Image (cartoon, rainbow, N blue to C red; front, side, top):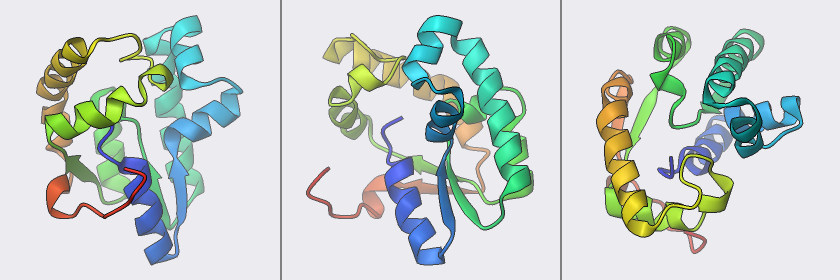
Length: 155
């Protein structure tokens, strides 16, 4: 969350002349609900099942795509194996201070960090990375975000 998957994914897709798909945006469009509404109304596990369904559907129905997944996608079911069997995966390793700065601006749109103080956000990020990194490290490639940061005034 906040490492720049969507931002970088769009750039890479354009360079490769591939279609870019953001899995969260696809789910929102298909369900006609925002991700935070799905979490609030139906819970995280319902969302994770939807996420797996749309991950499989997307991989089956599209070729030559760059797919940005949510930060938790690879941590549930066998999603990281599905991704690795069907494409090339990347983990964008990002400094916690950078993540905090970025995510503070977007908290209202992100159900897992909505209404957290700066300290709570920092604790959440550290805890999430500790739990999730074992899945992230199964990616084919690991990039350190600070070594390939693209200058952009919006960031």
